[in-house]
Length: 206
Image (cartoon, rainbow, N blue to C red; front, side):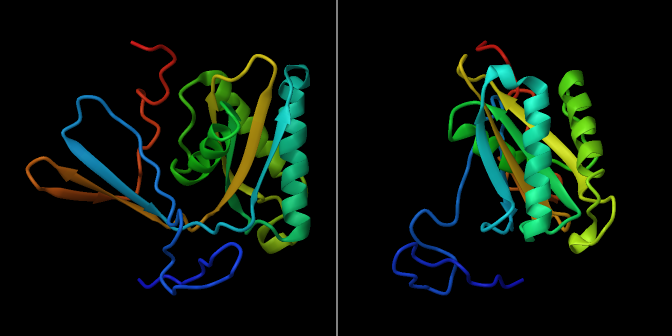
């Protein structure tokens, strides 16, 4: 399927008609031990709207997370910055760049209905989903109760003095695909990226 060319130089606005250029497309990678395969996943996500971030602090606690999440979704809905109902990713913790990546990956690389394996984080996901669907907005900004198809939260250890958070929305169309290339040359295709592995979510350094 041909993709609409919409990548231009940030300053000169020049367009090479192929979505490629300086740091484009974005390529992220992760390491999985003992694997004799390579997974290649492509995600077609709009890159202009539907994301926001803030540096919260430990004193803000869970209520601060909920408040920012709610304020962000209301702003998105009122200003037309998200194509709801949306899959919403939330990145918590990490450094100033990793929490943005975590939020986007949470939105784009997990499947609807898949809970975070940490029971407390999974409970937070359900609570945020309920909050998001209770703001009175539905599809295409009309009145309704379907702002969030699902909410995915991913976390990282962070600085003791901060609690960064990012919120990202991903179209419910979930335009993505994964190919697994095995060592013997076989290729398998699937729609679940399986990005967040137990190794990626590990807490220790073993």
